[in-house]
Image 1 (tube, one colour):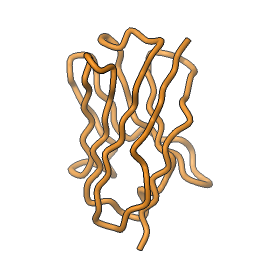
Image 2 (image 1 turned 90 degrees about the vertical axis):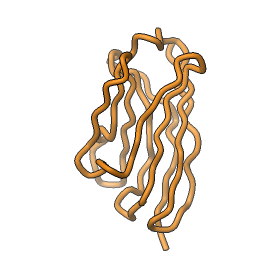
Image 3 (image 1 turned 135 degrees about the vertical axis):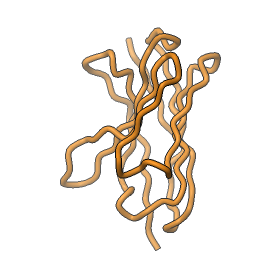
Image 4 (image 1 turned 120 degrees about the horizontal axis):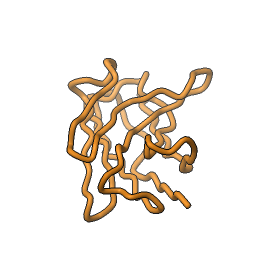
Length: 114
């Protein structure tokens, strides 16, 4: 049983920052590759950032230099620090153990608007 609980979203102005958190259970977290995805109306769900068990990271081109993914294995939590936010970052953000074919949390809404 996989349970993923995202939090930290909200409404921010362009140029602002948010830090998202995802608390994971039902996974072998210390060896899992974790990722953040996002989905906005009319678009497919897309990969934003991923981090392996060893700490290797990758990012979507659109967020490079602005977002940072990190993890705390002791807390079974993955984070996404989001800086210099743009209106096009508006979406529902989800985390996932990418080694599992299914299982999504409820997501957390990020809205960037003036």
